[in-house]
Image 1 (tube, one colour):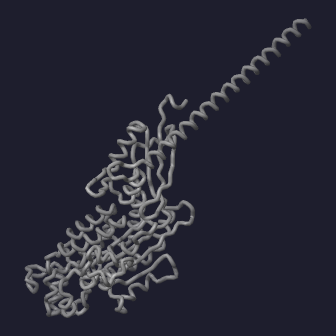
Image 2 (cartoon, one colour; image 1 turned 135 degrees about the vertical axis):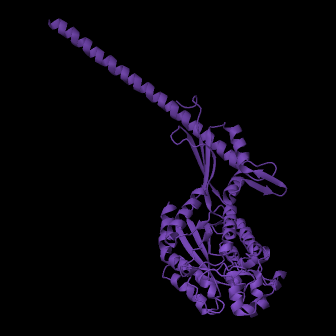
Image 3 (cartoon, helix red, strand yellow; image 1 turned 180 degrees about the vertical axis):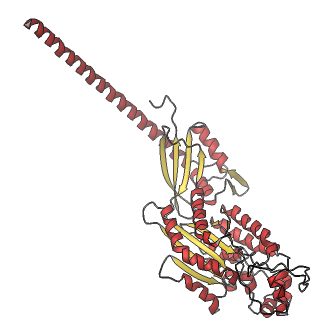
Length: 467
């Protein structure tokens, strides 16, 4: 019995050693395979990374531009089609065909987005009384808007968000300057300016380029031919009494050009918000400016249905030229809320303010400037034209129109629009498969405005490349 027990004990011990040995051998084999796989994966990772470097450094043969420059230009200007002299390249098609040939269709995803560490919010606001409530609401909500943008772009905790308010008025007029008082807090990140004709336009005599410093931020006025929206300054100043104010107080097109030019070349995301309830350069037709009798002039302002779309269009085209050249986003805010309490000074002529009229003071059968709940909607016949032109500006700069039907939604509308601007500020190619096995290569590239951008290339390996 003892012999049997000794034999069985020896067998058990031998079995344990055999199993243990098998486990050790299996583990050693597993470690060797894992090491081989890691080495293979490391090799593939370095190989794909080297391919990415070669791709970025390669030169497009027609334009002689590097691939990295073409990518950053496409991102910065948010244009698939880039034109160099007589050559136009569709960057999306060009890179898709290049990556398909080099890596294979469906095997990659490229994403390029800027490292946004600074945002400049610029509000260009009609200085007329009809937008007083909007100016006050913005002043109230602006600190919260700034903090919300900081949270959106948070990466290092050193992000900077500043807000500039440009009120269209007369900086020599005390009442206009006082419109900035509600923004003049102790916060260093909020600045308010009153800008008028002298700031917005270059005088015709200045177009010999002799009075402009070529390095000046105001050089754009000469470059883009930004002149007043009227041909004879004299008659406007003499008849309107407030100078050319009726034009420039509402000229949000020239205001956008000004704000964009003064943020040119900065390493930041620049977003522009023109706020108005009328056409740029005002919804008042040219004919009204020639009326010398003030009561009839005021009646014409309210009653005429002749929307000066051509004059306004010329103004916003200047805004587009400057903003697109600088790569800035424009989000027009349309605030047609009928919340302005117009108190008539001339009852003889303003009996129509409380309802529609058949008065033909302005040679119009019906006056359209009517009261709504004790407020006044100015130029309602221009509403469709205003929205059409605002949408044109937004579409051309990759922004969006905010139709501010309720002033209480101001902070929500602005914040969500900025979120959309930041999210859309990307260039993508291919399909992203978040949970698939992939190799990732990342590079930092400079944008034309000196902002850095992260370029990431995800490559999904073939089945025979990974275990």
